[in-house]
Image 1 (cartoon, rainbow, N blue to C red):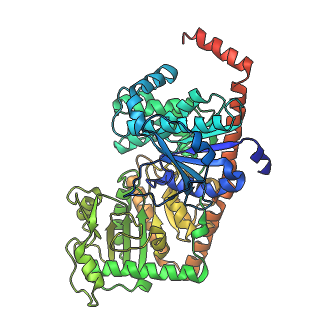
Image 2: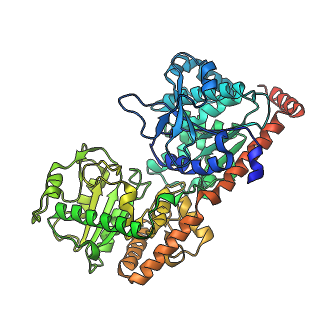
Image 3: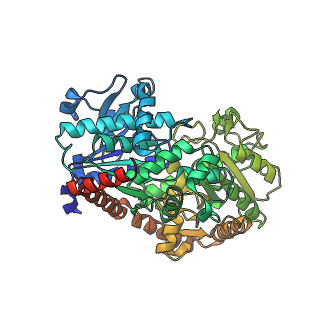
Length: 572
């Protein structure tokens, strides 16, 4: 790897989720940063949106007046565009530039016209967050171009790599191509717009994938602008990557470009407690989970005699398999487990804050004897009558006395960030308390949640339709004993079979011996160690090499002449 360090002078990675924790891409970039810094040092610069204010500062960013000060002194940006420079407060503390991009809205129409003429990006049907993402991408490209010119690197092919993630940053890549034709560009799609939309609209993706046309589906699903932008960025980029084999197949069909490299998402388990610290964390988490369950139901649970399971992630009822999880637990309950089973759904929904009646019970020394109303939800919801999880729980009878024997399901519809009003501990503080996790995704380009689970030694069940599930099947025997993971074969047409398989695997974990549980936990940790960024970063290095080589070839005079003749012949 050391020889690669001399290949370029600057590596920019731009994303809406730099210093801005929104979804899984934040985890990708924030955990990758330390490995990139160890390889390339101060050559690495992350660029994110400045969506913060004095009243609402970013908890992940520390501004520095000295960092990149000579560049900042000469920086000239359009009115309404500004930058703050500092450190991203994640392991490695990489340099981060936050860009205020409000001024880009004033030139939106002119910019969209330029993107149409040069790359065929159709912004005519844009709505929602399209303008916001494009304004940020445009501003980020201006910032990158200015720094590259300040460093005197704007005429040296291969000296600069500009990496952009997801459609939200696609305009940044296209603008960079116009502003800095010498720069090597990389585009990573973590999930295609059309693939996710097909699934979210209840359409079968996998059985009919070869029959789908991305452009046609974009028109049908009112996704023309986002799809057009994503497709253009994928085709213009010097190197195009996706995070898993299953997403590579999706991109090849819907975006019509085969990715150059599959770049799976690694993980840095450095913050996972070990030894006595892990045991304390697990014990505290289990005690808290048992207390919340008892205060909701009016029962008493011994945390040492319960089987605790969970699912978590983004609130996508079908895509993340929340429907499958609930139906699986219902089938598991029919097996009548001998010990109390506490199953938790930890996904952020439209929360209206912690339940006051639950808070009151948790502060009381008296043991509750009666259940609270709706004894299966920890926080109030603005849309309790229409929330998909609440509706399915009521339909399945969870919360009705005696309807599910010894099995209880609890809904935690908020971010576990340490300040939710009930648990007041982070998700990573609670994760060690579980005996199993289940992530039965229908649409999951990678799947950080099962990887996080095994990093904490908690066995997990996932599906063949997740990138992580495919990674497990490619590298391990499909068993808890081999890797701490069980991958369920899921298709468009075997829902009931999937629910039965998950119930059977939970039953196995619930009834196995302590010695086997310990062995499975050790296997899980070994799997997580193998999936660390120190092992996976080589795929990104390959993508950088491809991008550099293509940018150098693209800028050779003979290549440019051939390209110009081809474009003239095509009538461009």
